[in-house]
Image (cartoon, rainbow, N blue to C red):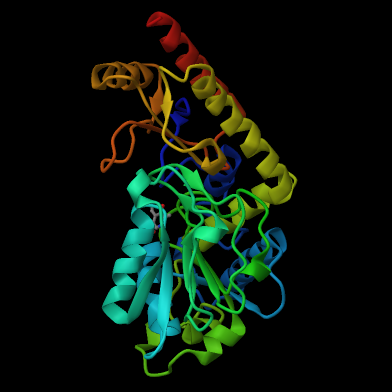
Length: 362
Ligand code: PMP
């Protein structure tokens, strides 16, 4: 067996080794069925049990209350950019978007194709270094919904807490921080997340949506684009991404085994703390992008004083086995993504590399 990489990829990203090993164990013959999960009917009892167990684990670990549907969709978070306004933005109403980075901009762009929108707040002028305060966000009480991106994968900022938008439904793109910390699902009308960071392989999108929102949505949309279709059919209207859902189930069991979301959050704070400490200890060398109160626990973004040093830092890291430390192609710099499955030891190794690199250039 090959050595595991020090994987700091932004997504698709590291999965727990135990999960991969169990998937390997069951790969060719799942539970004595004589076939892989990939080879079985999505209408079989065996698959149905996997499907329902995965949904039940989402409910348990995230504390999803009654009155919400848990859906497994396809099309990534990017399709949700369109499905949310299709289902929830009727004529005569406007939807508010809080712009905190490229993904919220993309979400807004899709909504603009479909209906009336407005920017409820934006931190673009400050290069998306921070999350706006609740008092900076403005929207009418009759808005269709307010959309936020809970963690900004590219800029490395994260909402520490969410605004109370009642009676306006709050919709959140949680693609890059779902299951990484405790949230109160009741604050949200809809949560969506592509799986490929904290939940499993790409190909599944998790949606948690309040049933009354689903029921109010228009019925003349294409069948696959209505949440109603998937809610009514337990995400089995058509063939779901069965292997991805199975993998998500294994990841959720792993999180449960770690002590649940609270335990994982504690570890995530410890992990991010290791890297942010190096940044704080060397403020003239490692230039953190996010303002400290808006820092992400999932994506730590920073620059070095010159492009030459940055290149040397990244080349050196690569030579030592670190993967995925380049910033997003749109912003450059460095980014360490520390999703749930990234072990504390890997973060400590990165911390050590950063400290050593700083010393070499003192
Ligand atoms: N939103 C956020 C916050 C993301 O990080 C990403 C992907 N990196 C997306 C949306 C787009 O997700 P997908 O590729 O699943 O469409």
